[in-house]
Length: 168
Image (cartoon, rainbow, N blue to C red; front, top):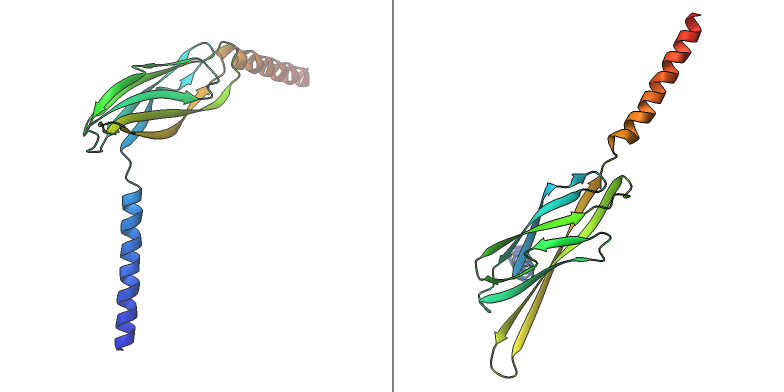
């Protein structure tokens, strides 16, 4: 009975220890959340998103953040594209993605990056840290009304024509 208690205690300590290590390792210095404002657009329109970057590290107390998109398929802008952020602070930026007028209907994926750089120890040689977080956003290009209306009207016309021939 004593051996069972000792084994159970040992297993519990290992489980708790593994859980603590995973939690500590998963604690980032910056986080980013992207919220769609208008992500379903027609060709030629602009999709917009709100980007929220939060900073949690105590040292360095300030980092410089640069926002970007990996391998962009369309033109985009961040307003602002870069900024300084302090510990415990959140900063917002607006992401605008310009959808070309010849874009085909469908869902397109974009990888948004926030890269933060700060000086951990300022004495020469300075110790610089860089952190990067990424997230994925989707832009849905919806078909224009005419690309739906013309085929639908043609289908209705053919249906009415067939029904009228059956009656005659």
